[in-house]
Image (cartoon, rainbow, N blue to C red):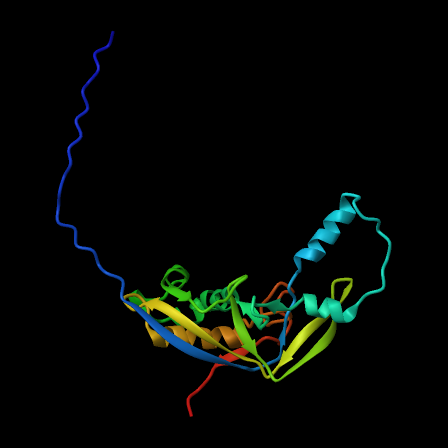
Length: 212
């Protein structure tokens, strides 16, 4: 038999200096530049599609309830407020990094830096929704491919983001600038400047609210 070498565990104690997180909170108010169109894909619609595909329900045509379609497309918090997923705002910030970081040399901001060091913390259940305030709501008829949709549209909307960030790696000014850039160049919701439709819309744009 081959001799078994005895493996000895050696515990090494050493002084380990941890650089603490420098967490700070900031609140940013966003205001509307163009109306917001919501286009949530409801779970019940997905279930209806799956039931038809699996033969659980017959594929008979029904009269469309346009008010119901519009209501089902809205993101609602558990408290019944109109909201929008916080990731939409953060994604816009991350995508706008190239517009802000150019010319900064070694201090350039990266997408990974923003993704890891900036967290939006005031989202509400069920899907981390940021409450949306608005002055008027309507229904917009529009086409996506060959499908005609009736989507909820909100005019003169605004919202508030509470952001926690590591000040060791990013400043409050950088965060505000990224949000302002994202509001103009990316937007949120359907038919925004840069979205699933290829970036042909002008809806869902916002800006950081100025003082005064």
